[in-house]
Each structure stands twice: as structure tokens, then as C-alpha cells.
Length: 303
Image (cartoon, rainbow, N blue to C red; front, side):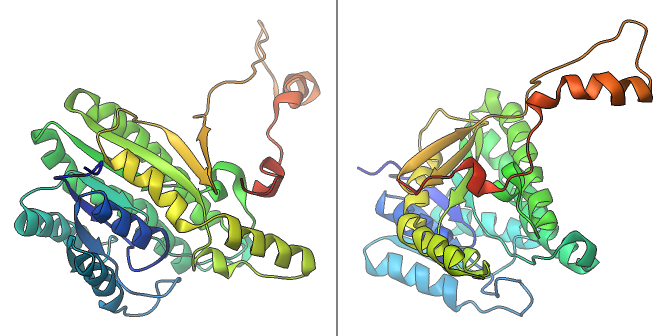
């Protein structure tokens, strides 16, 4: 008996990487799977192909599971509504959505074209809204369902050249948390995963010297998509966890906190700009978050 036995799961971005591993594992754990992937490039700037989604679905069926493919875009509400209907028509239900679909269009802020910002927001943040909105009423009616969205340390911690991606991924955190709050009385759960894994998106990291080459190789060897899939499938099952930000780094599962106050200053006669510069802000400086990237927060090799 798998943890998803008898359930129907929609997995987006499932032609490769994390999405594919989630779809394959969901099927092995007993789910009937709607395999979605537009089939485009990492940048999402080509017309795409249905072959990737079809290949994953075919692999599931060849292994004795049940799956259908879908090659539409999560950035389109009509397309996502069709994915949900496809699950209902093909398998008679829908119990979970695992949503790692994404693109990258990296650029420093001062060089970023408007269309690259909009495209990343459309796939990641609007896409998360679309899959949530299209499925949530069904989940509420059946008194149960799980959303597994994906965030990134590019947003939680920060990464140069990814303001669009970071903004989208932090938006997904807020969306998921409120979705979890609103769904609590109806057993509708939502969580987000920040994955550390070698995928074609991570493969865009530039290698500029021997140190970066070694770091990338460690990532490739020690942080795999199938390790992330274990947590995604667990959260899609009958698990009572909701509203959380979790990470997977190799064999390590990490719990991130939601932002909460860490320090405050008060002045009974009120603050002025000068007083804040002179004393108010400096008083909290020891609690400031530094500008270090992910490697400064996780300076050790994956477990």
C-alpha cells in the first residue's frame, strides 16, 4: 500500500527534473497521475512539445501505473481548468496538486527586460494561483486536498541576478500560507518546498572558476531531484502538515520559519528621520539579515 493509494494527483512541469521524479514516485505510491508539461525551454521562449509529458506518462504506464499527459501551460487559467477537468474525466477525482513547473530568465535588475520579469511571474506566481484557484473549490467540496507548491532559496535567502524569480517565489510562499489558513476548516492543505537539486534550471549556473566547478559537481552528485520528490509525495498524501516552508538538500529536510519580529525600538515622543538614523536603526543592527547568498547559510556539503 503506497501513501497515495487510490488518489489522483496532478503534477506540473513533469517532463524532467523534480516534476518527473514527483510524477514517477506518485505513481509508484499508488496514485493515478495527470502529467503536465508545456515542453518548452528553461526560458519558456519556444512553442514547446508534448513529447516530454507523454514520455513520463508512458513510463508510468509501462511500469504498471495509470497516467495521462497534458502539454498546456500553467500560466493560462483556462489551461489549468482543463487539467483539473482532465483528472476528473480520466480518473474520477483529484486529491493533490504538485506544482514545480517553472522557467528562468536570469538578469541583473539594471539589465532586466520587462518581458523577462513578466514571464517569470506569469509561470511561477500566476501559475501557482491558477492551479490553486482551479482546484480549491473541488478540494473544499470533498473536504480534503493538498497543494504542494515550490519556492526557492533565491527568494528565501537571495541570489544575484534573480530578482524576477525571487519575487515570484516569495509570492508563492505568501499565497500558499494564506491558502493553508483559509483551507484549514475544510482539510485543504498547502505547503511549499525549497528544493536543492540538480535540474536543467540549476544547470544554467555559470561556471567561472575551479571553485564554482567543484561546487556545481557537489550539487549534481549530492542533491538529486528524486530526493525532493520524497517530501513532495509525502505532503501530497494523508499528512497533517500545512502552511509550512520546507527545504530538501540531499538527504536533509529543512524547516524554514515564516517572517516574525526579531527586534524593535520605541521612542515615547516619536521618531524623526535623524533619530532613526542616529539611534533607532543602529540599535537593531545586530539583528539585521546579511546579504549573503545560499552558500553562506548552508556552508556545508549536502548530507
